[in-house]
Image (cartoon, rainbow, N blue to C red; front, top):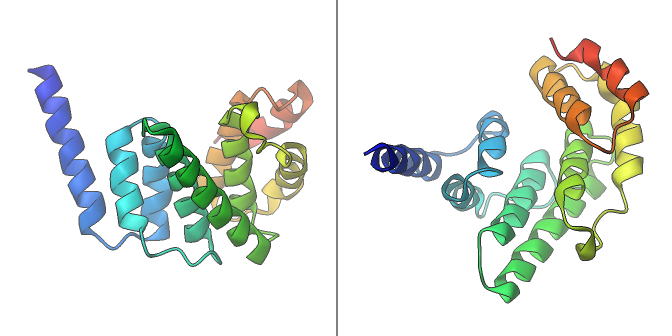
Length: 170
């Protein structure tokens, strides 16, 4: 019974993601859920399909979701296609917005979690340094808090950096 209720809830969330015109704020809220749930990831991917032109933050999230889709498919060729598509969208968005801390964080978080065999980890230190330098200037309080919380949990962040990030947790 409990499994049935959870399945129904996830289906409703999936349908609501696809049925609406997603805003950046909605994608920001749903992306962390998509990292943990294949149904939400697929629905978010469908909701973002066609909205990414490679130039904005929404395109960066579309790239992140495409890379997440690689995790939920069994076909190795599909996995690689999702990964390549997502990487291109994210990198294009960053190339158009080099100073966007949110995009740099998104890339950091993705590279932090990908297997090193994929070879997509060359920007970890660069992005972390950029984030650490410009996080105090980020005016979006909730986003700043989410970034700080993630970095504090990351193994790529040293103790000194974690200590300096604690002031953004509230």
